[in-house]
Image 1: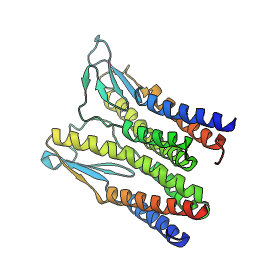
Image 2 (image 1 turned 180 degrees about the vertical axis):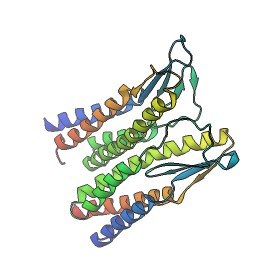
Image 3 (image 1 turned 30 degrees about the vertical axis):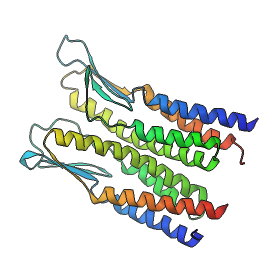
Image 4 (image 1 turned 180 degrees about the horizontal axis):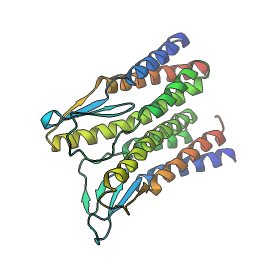
Length: 143
Length: 146
């Protein structure tokens, strides 16, 4: 059983890890000719984009739902329920990212690309799990 | 009485979330050549299909949805699990919505030169999923503390 200060520290650490994930690459795929697609929280960057690259950009702002869950985690310092909502919501959001990563990895292998998970995704996963541990501990302390 | 209503709402929320995975989240209707019938590009929780061709590596959005729905259903016994499940379902829905919003825009921009009459938009699945989130939080509010 961990005390409330430790639980709050875990939530804070989760928020810091999540915030760091917002500025680091999440995953990337390198193709022949030096073309590289880098996915971040705030859009997709295409390095050495060839002239015949398809129009339109598949560049979602994955950071938007994560910012909402991180804000709930911060509110969780004062409202324990908000911490649980933030951590669980972030876990759900990361589940969608995990589905996309598996899909992108499959496509990359099929097209002989070189797929790599970035530090952003590692920080996001770690931040989510640490925050969840803190949120659950805060709930137990509250009961 | 509140407990019965809560249990019914938990069941409806979980059922709606699972049902949503089988419905289209996004749809693109496009004619690949003038005069040809439209081909449908559909993304569901379990597959991505272009006409009769299935994308072998399509994202399986259904997995996090089903896991969150199971947590919501656990709320019949443990109320806090339901709250966490409803929040997880909201997180899945929020991230999926962000992805689909951009994918639909990408479908339009990337293919408008091929077929100016193309149609791209959200499918019924996303609306059913959003309804499931509302039902799940409703169930948490209604279900009494044990």
